[in-house]
Amino acid sequence: MLNIETKYTGKTAFLHLAFRPFFFAALSYAVVSITLWFLVYSQGKAILPNGYNIISWHGHEMISGFSMATITGFLLTAVKNWTGIQTINNKPLLGLFLLWLFSRGLAFISGEWVLPTLAIIDSLYLFVVMWAFSAPVFKKKQWKNLAFSGKLLLMLVANIIFYLGLLGYLENGIHYGLYIGFYTMLAVIFNMGRRVIPFFIEKGLGCPFEAKNYKWVDASSLWLFLLFSVVDIFIPADHPQGKYLIIFLVLSLVALHGTRLYGWYHKAIWKKSLLWVLYIGYAWIVLGFALKALSVFTDVSPYLALHAFAYGGVGMITSGMMARVSLGHTGNNVFEPPKILHLIFALLFIGAVVRVILPLFLERYYLQLIEVSQILWIIAFGLFLYGTHRC
Image (cartoon, rainbow, N blue to C red; front, side, top):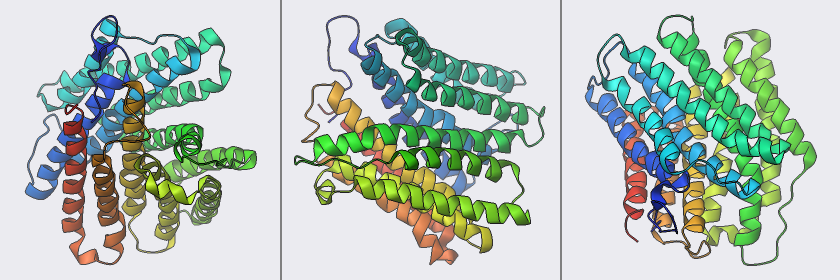
């Protein structure tokens, strides 16, 4: 399906551009990490030594493991197109990949030295990604792309805060680190989505269409999301004024991002899997804001909003991005993608419905619904991973 081994004139193709090793890493880790999470959740298996809480591990690895692998592959490939400068490849790229890999594996080793070493290696990985992206941007003076550099820096800061909390040096550091990292990762998704989704829709429909974008939506959604993130992370959930401020912010974000989706809409997107997966993924994020509002004054779990963002939004958007970028950079026809992508994207959508929507109506089966959603995620990304070696 997506041939990550396509040859080029020179060294090993697998290490020529970052999307090859890091999309492979993201797909593999999507299967492995959620399989481990399923075993812990359903069977009560203890898998982590050193006092590393499994829930904290799950949250961190979905951000710094799966999502950052996808972001690394996308940004270090895209910045080559934007600047015309070759990003790190061959041995330096292999070294970066190994930093990511060691950061995932060290958590399963026992020893007092493990967590400090893990903190250093994982943070070094994020620093190198930031440097590898920013160097060509500075060289070509493409200052608008520094927005991504700033977000990568914030991801690094969030990671350091998380490990300071994990090591016992910073009270509430785990909470602050996870949520700063998560909301920063969402901001990266917004930035990438605003840049490429309307472009992909215009080019992929096969008919004349101009996606509408509004500068007032771009500016206001950015600043309101920043304010929402600060309030949600640092103001206690039971703070009276904080509740009303959160309601105002999330409903404003629903309206703004809904307006953006409306401007991008064309009925022909439903005929193109590489388009509807991105569109629906973005819609899941809008739904996440709505569920966040619902959770403030009702007994609806805030984790439903969290997983609308993560499972539906990030899961579908990153899978669509990986498919689109991989096809485009390996000489495949992005206008006639493999039919198996329909199944993969549909499984992720159904999994998000099971994880986010059904618990609203079938609360007594909440644990079972989570397990079903985990299985659907594993199957979807397992098929995706299998497809990378089929042609």
